[in-house]
Image (cartoon, rainbow, N blue to C red):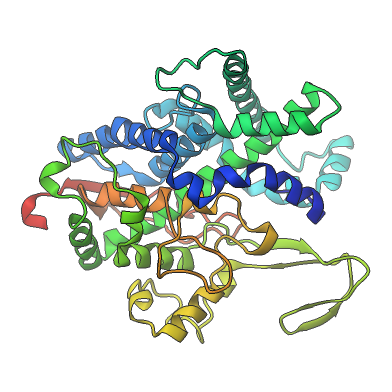
Length: 428
């Protein structure tokens, strides 16, 4: 879907999955709630508790990538087949190392595939062999997860049950398998290849974007202790500190969406640190002229693009655009607020808008884009709420947090090391 050139094939593929990534479906999905409890209480909390108790710091960038991967793979393949990166240090580091080894070479693999192939034929390796090997191993891992989910899918179709005692269902995989199987006259092998490719894209996009956003959010909260305290006070209104150790209940999406400071913090992090900072390529419609902003009479078949990283720093809309100021979203007049939202493009827009926007973020009432997008946060706000209602964070060392000048704007230094302290009654 991500690489579909024409609008029709993109829309057809997106339509297959649109309902299970809709806000209403996500809000009412019991499996997703159970998965969140398992990932946050069963895996993330023990890790953070151990760090706080032993006074050991953590590279939270690595942890947030792991949390995000666990969320998207649990929703895709079920808890019996998810990545389990938070709990498995070696496994997550192997994946991150393999995946990030590809970053310097994405231009060749995405923009110049023909040149890369031609160069390789004459003995020139534009993409090193070890990077190609890492890519092949990543793809094989995705195929293995798909095959395992396929067995669960087949068992359910035959009246069986999944291995999980709580009806652990490979939701996204099964939706793709069923719908592509209905469309595909070429047989299961052709459908499987499409599923492998589609879900590989989901896993890459789903873990990196949320992981980057959470990292920059924690970075800014850690160096702005006054705002961190204000957020903690807001979170205390929905989850009393004394109840947290014993309770595994998670606040509802509607409750989280009602928190104005949390909403503002997430929006401002989206604005200043868009995880996808590179150009979002589009091709103008054939057989007609196109107008884009001040540019008129663009011929058909021309590649064009825009960048969230440029739109989000318009000083006429966002005064002091290079400063992280969540209060701008709380203090803006109604007309200014709508204009700020109009310039926000973190998930794109229109038919090509990110399918997983509601999975990453749900729409708080009152913080809506006046145009079309109805989103603000699920995973990102849930994780933030979970951590900052329990812990205080402080930066260790001097991290290089400059966003990479690349399609994915990960921290240039590759890490954010934080110290965690337990929140007590006196902190609220």
